[in-house]
Image (tube, rainbow, N blue to C red; front, side, top):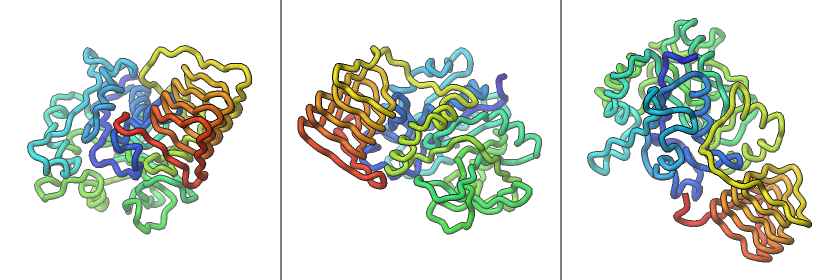
Length: 370
């Protein structure tokens, strides 16, 4: 069923501590799960929920984003039926890069004004989840909310940077703090906000007129006492992937079959850019256990508890243990990886050994690769 709601994936000033993994790409296009990018999860959730018009607010380093999304055909989005729109940053001079997302929303207000859709969901790209936004909209309307914030209850401290949310007995949000705040709450924001389009435009114009330019920090957090801002608690899997330890931890969790099925198939499938690759080739003497192997790999050595992206080659005698090797990586003869993350096209020389820890994985990158 088509929802009366448009989707917005907000990439303006995404909070992240991904270091070299985002030196040449935006956070949205960090590879994840063997063949996906982080943006695939929120985009697939929108499409699977019945949203047929999605805008991506690009900011910096978005060349890989354009390449990955294309015309949106892999997500069944195309121009003739609303479709996918990548809105480049509105930049008049270099100082505009420092302005917040409200400024970019204001500069693209005609895009929203022309749409007949009544509601908007604004989301970030680093929340790895699979959610039915139709149910969120139904609760939003049913409870007469001005703004609904999708949240998750996390009783224990987890990796990743997420805003903390304080919710009263009636489900209303009474306080919200940035990740480094000391708010005593086990509920975190999933950075998904549903509201009427007209309210969004009103918040944009009013906040900018007051010299404020951040949607959540200025327009929403400062209006908690005035607006009916309520929490919707997501019960499915959530990975907050905006730090290196969080990336490693949530990647390794994909090796749990229950997590895999929950994330990739419930309530609907996760889509990504399709590439035609041959099946993985397992040569004589290879040993693979408890691992996620994408198409196009060639394995002669041993792989244990690891994730290999498309086109990875593990040469004879090499050992890959508890590691993530992105597209076209090569592990040379008798090389060894343990608790490592290898970016795209990184080659490990024969006999070379790299070892990190589960808390601090070793990260190897190749410059100018997206």
